Structure formats: structure tokens, C-alpha cells
Length: 570
Image (cartoon, rainbow, N blue to C red):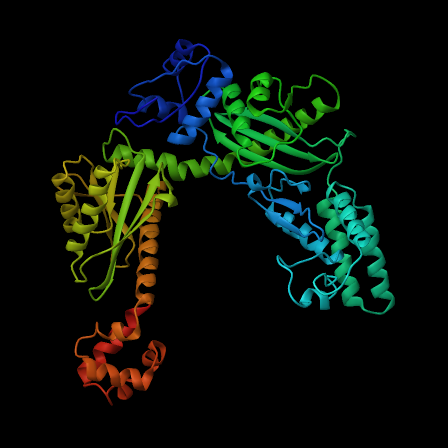
């Protein structure tokens, strides 16, 4: 599905295309579906030979075009795993890039909570003196001297001892904590008997970590098969998905995801599960609810997908569904409030500005220091939310105290590039300034034959957002300062200002003290050398009194320098 600009906004699949398309234009729709329907301007379809081909094509097109109305899994980064390396003297570490480790024999996880993975590795490294270094050093390091390494680089350690440690670690990571618990108890009692109570307390904390964090709910399945359990709950346009990771007959972790949907629950859930393993190791088996097409997923994922109809496996799926329901009910009010602050506020702005469409907004701000280190920043908000991957920095070519010239250059550079590289055009441009800035930006946009509305944000005496400047001729639109729209505009203004100022500071920090002094009127080569010889650093120069500066500079130049340095780190 495409909008009026030809941009792909949704990709889906259907057995009966006519029925699926009709469903979008019959009856009343709300939320995300209503917004999708309002933007559809054209369709394109591809006929394939099977459902599996259809699913593969759908997922590939979503990856390629990243349509705004498809479920985005950007936050589902590769989960960490724990790897026990297959070496003569192994190491234990947390890894993320499992694609390079597909042949690893001892890979455990995933751990959606990276802190838990690191804590587990730290725990085992404290108990078992494995090799800690990546490469063998020429002499024992600190870990050897504190008893957390056997000094394999300098001492001959029996292979049996190494293998025993390795086997005990494998048992622990497979869910058998008894050996490690016994070892910690022995060490705790030993230190306690020696009256080393602080050391004994440390081992007590390790025991607590195992008992509270690692001894998770044990399931009734005793086959020790690694499997993932999917459950779902749908209500008020939102789909909640819960995934349990079962390793060694225990639920070791879970993943929760809530999103609003525009397709049928069956299609959205199937698509989510299909994309779930993009950055994950697949288990031996996954269990899914009855509504999911298990045969399609099994063929696509190339693993055992089951829809249990009775017994303990059905209980696990039902439990996952119940947790999905609890998660949605607990977070629904927060989700609605977030939507009011973003999507609904964005819709209100669209209506006030009388726009047919408002999704992508690009906001600009400029920064300089007395006409030097001239930079601009651009931040992007999509549907009321910041899209940090699209932020851009601009170093202005001429250092002059000319805000209009800066605005003209940055707007031209940005939108000439948009035309040249056929980038996505924004629906609205916001400049952080008054009528003059707006008119300069509009002149450049018109010269490029673009039809993009430009508005400005006016600030009051306290440098806070006070009004929206829009239309032609420019009108000042008062915004309720307690409204979600005002908070969104204020957030946009704060975001672009902070982004630009941070870039400005980076640019300034790269300049040498000598080049900084070049920006102060009245300081030439001779005076600059004398200042550098006496004060050496910016901080010392800032701390200097006017009388100290006047030993080198005339009074008016000393005042200029103090004023310049006072504003330098702002």
C-alpha cells in the first residue's frame, strides 16, 4: 500500500486479496488502522506460488522498505548469549553476534536481560579459575594473584582439572545449580570459620543471587528440550505477545511486546514469530497458540512448530497467554498516555495547520559563538516520536554572525540532497526562530520547486516556547500551554537545541587555544603569544582577574576576552 507520494506505507499478504482489501474500506476503523486507510492512495500486488513464498517475500519487503504501519522490531536487537569456548583452556564470556558462533558447542541463552547474563558470567568466573585473558600473557596477571585464574600461561595445569571445571559449568548453565551452590557454601563456611566475615558475606550474596535470580520456575516437562513458548492477548486494537524461553526444563527468561496492529491478529502474530528469530538462535521446538499457522511457520523457520491441544504443553501456552493479558492490562494506561503525547498531539498539529498528511517533521536550529564555529542541527520526529537515526549535523561553510545566511545554507544543503538522492521528504519543516527565519527557509524551498510547509517556534523572554508561527502571511497561533501539543512542540524545540549545542561544543573542543584567541578582537600574534606563555590553558585564562589580563591587554580588549571566555562553554 502506498501514499500519495508513492512511498510504501504497509506490506501484507493474503490468500484472498479482494477480501483483504475490502476489509480496510468497510465498517469503522480506529487508531492505527484508521490512519493507514486515510493515507492509502495506491496498491501494488505480487502473485506467488505458495504461502511460504508469500511470507518470505512479505518479510523481505518489510526489511527493505521499513513501512511505517508494519510492526517494527527495531528494539529487538540481538540478545546476549553465554559462550563457554571450545578450547584447551576455555573462557566464559557474553556474546551477541551469534551468526559468527553458529558452530559453537556450548552456547546458552538467550538472555533478554543483559545484566543477568553478565552477572552469571561474573559469578562463574569468581568460583572457577578459568582463563580470563584473550591471549596468553608472558607472565601471570592480577587474576592469578587474587585466585581467579590458575596461571595457565606460566604453570602446567592438568587437563583433568580443566575438564572437571568445564563439566560443572555446563551443568550449571543447563539448570543444575547444586554443585555450584555446594561449592559456595563450603567457601562461605571456610571463611566464616577463619573469622573472615566480610569474605563470607560476599559468598552469601552469591548464594542469594542463585536462589533468587537463577532458580527460576521449573516446568513439568522433563525432556530438557530447549523450546520457546508464545502466547498472545488482543484488546482495544493492541496485541500483546509473551515469549517464554525454556532451557533445561526451566523458564530462564521471558520477552514481552505490545503494539497496535492494522491486520488480523493471526497475520500479525504469525509475522511477529517469523521475524522473531532474525537475530536469535532457534531452539529445538516452539509452541504456539491454536490460531497460528504452525505448518507455514515450521516450513519458513525450518524447526519444529507445535500447536498443543492438551497436557502440560497446552498449559504452558495458556500461561504465556495469561501473562500477555496481564502485561497489556498493566501497561494499557501508560500506552494510551504515550499515544496522547505523541500520535494524538501530532494529529492535532496536522489539523491546526490544515495539512492533509503529517507524519515526518524536520526541525532545525543554529549555533555559533560570536560568529565563529557556526553549525546547524536537524532532528526528525515521526508520528510525534524522535527518530534519532535520521538526525543530521551541518558545519556551516562561512563563520559569520548571520543567522539568515546560516539558515539559507543549511536548508539548501538539506533539500538539494533530498532531491538529488531521492530521499524521503518531510511533511513539515520547523525552524527555531521568527518570521525572518521562516521567510528565508520558504524562499529556499520555493527555489528548489518543493511544496513543503515551513513554520516557526517563537520563544518568550525566558527563552521558552510561547507560540507557533504559521501560514502565509505569517500568523501567530497561541497553543494551550497545558496541552499535549504544546509539550510535543516544546520537546521538539528542546531536542533540536540540545542536539545542535552538543555538536557546537564538539566542534569548539577540537579548536586549539591559539585558534580560539584568534576570535577575540584586539588580540594579534604578539598578544596571543604573551597570553599563551603566561596562562597556557583556557581554564587558567578564565580564572584570571581583569587586572591580570590587563598586564598584557588594554582594558577594552581584556573586557572582550573575559566576555568571550564566559560564553565559551555555554
